[in-house]
Image (tube, rainbow, N blue to C red; front, side):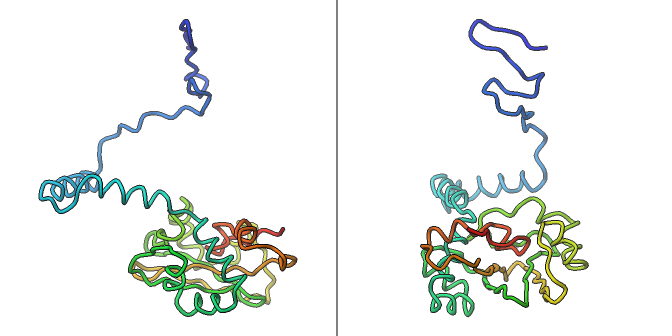
Length: 218
């Protein structure tokens, strides 16, 4: 039951925090085995002076800064520059690094959507994803349902995402691995010939780079 104080009111019973945001319970469940292992290894590395807390914080900040906007910038460059597009399709990792995005040692492959082929990305084993370029994967990407159905019935899965392709369109499903990740180069929308790279990047969605969506129309 809400109880008033002189300067504020608690609204937890109504599902809201004092700031008006949806109330969430504290995340104070017992640590999992892997969480305890991560803490132990991290503290041991710090104790042995193999890494510093500042370096760990910097890496966390770098990971948090990665987002689909990075991939959208790469797609927009490919739409605008045929030579860059050729380099992207030949070696997506090198092309991404060319734009200043550090994707690490993983083998990144770009696959292009065309009038006759639509590409869909999945990781049937777990949740392998080009995080260094697109940030964290969406929750649905990691679910068992998506991981199995994307391979078994990709056309039905795409319809559920709002992508209804003609029967003549071939759907190619690419299975990511620990060493090999994919990014979809979506088809460039019509009527965008006069748009700048920044404007084009705003048309590129995260789902379009996974294959479960299309680029926005201007």
